[in-house]
Length: 356
Image 1 (spheres, rainbow, N blue to C red):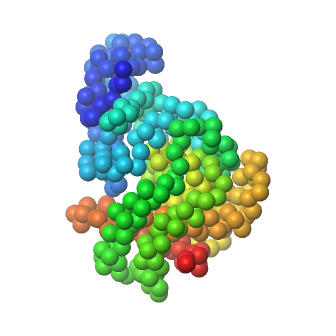
Image 2 (cartoon, one colour):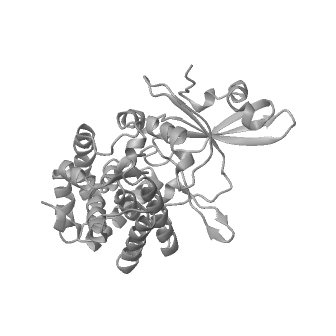
Image 3 (cartoon, rainbow, N blue to C red):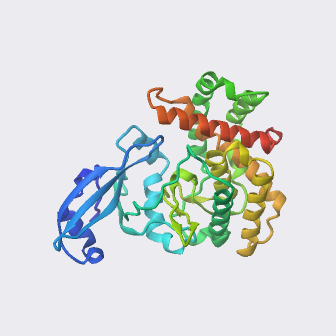
C-alpha cells in the first residue's frame, strides 16, 4: 500500500509510529508539523515534524510532499518527485556526495503524490545564494561533482529508473513554456545587465534552445544532480573544514557531467570568480574525473561541454526574472544576482562563439 501525502500537516504521531518505529526505538506520543518556508522556485513543500517520544525525549524529522503552489504541475511534468524518491531508494547509499539520511520514501505512481522523510540536519549551516561562495567552496563543489560524475561515468544503464535529462518533448517544453516567454520581461526589467551584445546572445539561446540542449547533453552519460547550487547545500563545519551535504535531488537524471558545474557556476559564483579561478576549478573537476578512472574525455572536450551548458542553464535566471512578483524582495534580489552571475559566465567563457 502506497503511503503518500498531499499536505505535510497530514503527518501525525500515528503515522510516525507506523513508519519510523524501527528508527526511533520508542513510541511517538505527540507530533507537531510546521513549514520550513517557501523559497523562489521551490518545487516541493518542506516541513519539520517535531516529535515527542514516550520517554519525553524530543526529536525532529524533515518532511517533503508535493508543492502547495502552481509549481506542482511543472514538477510532475518534469518528473521531479519520482526522481527524488528513486534517488533516495536506489542511489543515495552509493553517492560520493553526502545527502541527508532517508528514513522513509514512497510515491503514488499514478498521482505522483509522495512522502519523503529525512533526518533533520537543522544545526548545519545552510548555503545562501545571496551570499554566494568563495574560491575554496567553488573548488570543493567542483571536486565533489567530479567524484559524483566519475563514480557513475558510463554506468547509467545500471539504474533503469534513471531518466535522461535530454528528452525531446521536455526540451521543447523548456524552450516554449519557460525560456522564450521569460526573455522579453527579463530584458525589459533588468536592462542594465545586458551590456554589449548580451541581449542578442540571450535571445539567440532561446531561439536555438532545443538543439543547444541536445548538444550540451550529447557527451558521455553519468548521474547528475541537476539542481546543483549553494541553496541546495548544507555546509557543516567538520574538523575545522566546511563539508558539503547536498539536498533537493529532484532533478537527478542521466546526462552530461559538466551540466552540474555550469549550473553551480552560473547560480552561485560571483563575477570575481571568473577568469583564472573558474578555469582552475574546471581543471580540478577534470583531474578528479581522471582520478576516478574516466578515460577518453579530454580537458578541451570538458571545457566545450561546460560552455554549452552555461548557455542552457540560462533558463533559470530567465525563468525567475521573467515571472517575478515585485513584492517578493528576496526573489527579486536573487533573480538579479543569478542573472548577473550567469551573464558574467557567458561573457568570460565566450559562449556566444558556440551558437549557430
